[in-house]
Length: 162
Image (cartoon, rainbow, N blue to C red; front, side):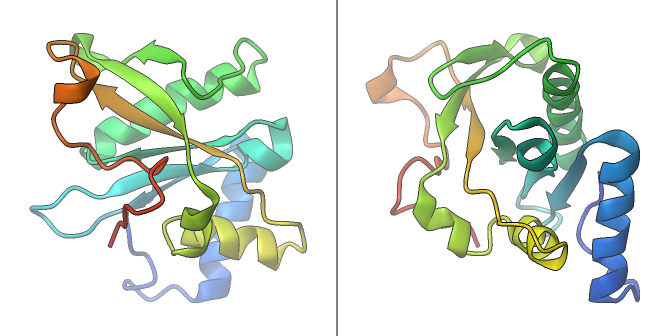
């Protein structure tokens, strides 16, 4: 997984896209981490599942990037091996006994820069930018739906990530 930002380290926009393409070509999927700052946790998402495996991409918000990367790797491997196909509404186990729920990301979020390198990559290779993605939202099983701690959920069109 790449944490933002190799461009800050001197890579050009084209070099970033070439790197993404190389990883997808070798491994089937690229995992993009977006780090906001050392205190606030960012988000991570996959690039390659839509085009290569006809499956929605995955996105996780608010977990440490290394943990997000591990979760996205496990889910991606499961999709790429043909073992699993995931849909919105499903639950799945997360590390440390936690539970995640998959929610469909609303279309409005695709144009807000949340998945910037996803949009950049597909545009650069001349493909239609896929508009299907599932967010993995941690569910706190100690509470009912009405009393869940606040989580950024991109199935809500009013939510904005930085």
